[in-house]
Image (tube, rainbow, N blue to C red; front, side, top):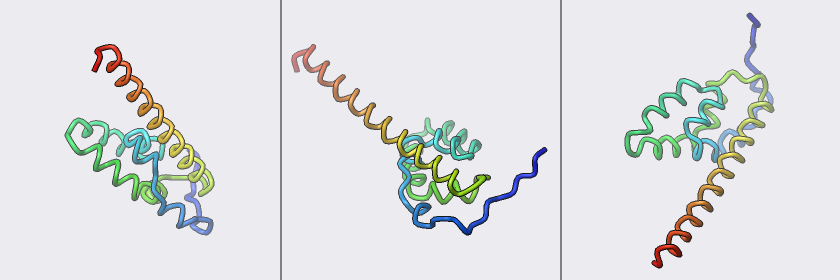
Length: 116
């Protein structure tokens, strides 16, 4: 088994850790799993069937997600962590935009079809 050492905190950008995480907000359970928090991701997925849990978890991970993922995850470097978080932010925002556009077009199509 490979001996993995935790990264040093010398290169940590505290400003980046305190920024809002769009990936954490939009991709709640998937963000947790991609941020090396598999147990949390599974727990949030199971609890997501309870009303308001996904919204509360999304807000919490949006605010504290990056800091949580950095302190709880085993990252090889801060740069690797930062790249993963930026990718998850892009995926979360892209998915939100795509789903919003599909919803608007679907509603528009229904209105045209049924003459509302």
